[in-house]
Length: 385
Image (cartoon, rainbow, N blue to C red; front, side, top):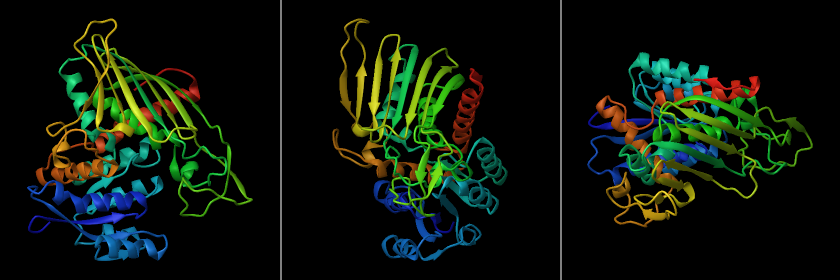
């Protein structure tokens, strides 16, 4: 870093690579007093040249490459965003940390617990900063929910329900992309969606101590896809391949303080698009949040135990990071805004040498819970974490 500038490399320029790049570009606009300024220097993507060309023309990267090693090893790169598929997370993140680069990596950080732990060890050994893409925890309404729970406004938390439902894989002609292959994705909906649920519930309620889980694959075969096809794509190929990981997961959770919970996730839920949310019930109150109404927190507080009514609160400046984006309550924020907050946390960690936001430690905790779910399903029993 020179003169307060952090020089950025982005690995993978699909949708999430563009989201990270926009987040870096927007950070000075939303946090004008922040001391560090990100500079987009290099992008690596093995796909068609048009993606890399767009990275340079639309986002201002200075150079492009098909080989991520050229970016990770470059002396003029200070921090790396890893936004490619799960099967590159471990190799890129470990190499980046060993090269002294700060690492922002998308969840689930590899194809399973062993790879996540390898990344964590490399980051710890190198002493670099880390961030992990658990963006939903940064929604201002979620931060308000966490504050209310910590203040004891609900009393003792009794149970929590998490839902992460999507229809992106509901069509049987959905292409057999890398997300459906164990060798390239590891898990299916566990790593893709349930990992977010685990992080949210840890952020809100505390550590999971024990769980039991069931999984299912409802669409067992899909038409083959090209190498760079997304998991939203349809395919008309006559060649059919097997789906190797789970479409659905449901777990019962027990927490360190005695609370109970459920976590339900599906990628084949017809009628559900980004139905991500939670309800938390305590001994004298409750609250609920739905990502699709991101700026709203439903609360049931300060009433009698029976016949209590729900109210909707709109986040306002002073709640979470709302003030960096909107001047008043009820003005909507979006998904990309959460990534700007994440970029701010990441570079705050770089600047201060102290962790801000979700880090590799949170990714390890989530991966440990997902591994326990897989064990529970295979062995048909409760598993202690």
